[in-house]
Amino acid sequence: MSFQAYLDNVEEKTGRTPKQFIAEAKKKKLTESKDIIAWLKKDYGLGLGHARAIDYVIRHGANFEVRQTTGSHRDASGTLKLDGKSRRSKKRTSADVGFARTRTSKGG
Image (tube, rainbow, N blue to C red; front, side):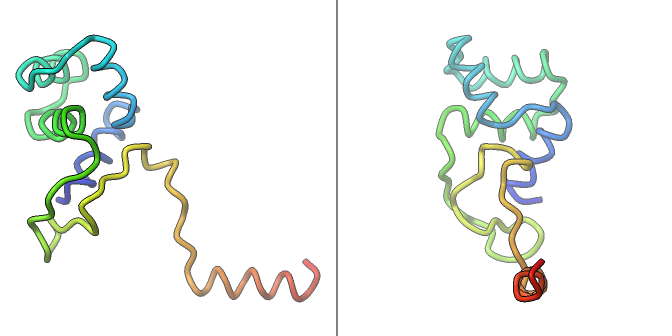
């Protein structure tokens, strides 16, 4: 599972985006990894892996070193998307573009 997929799974489990966790940790003045992980496990029921993923973005932000370059653990880039799955714009496929052109050219 990619780093981004870990963050997306946390959002599905908790309903909170990484940015929301960052803001809440800042408000609680949590800066130490052990305190952040304990909070995430206690308040949100996260397992260690998911808690560590959120801990990373709280303490280091969206950028990380890509280590997996192939397979299911691969991330597309070294920049994580922290706004949440629902805020990401849908990638338009060539079929979508063709459909849009057809509707526009037919007036509709």
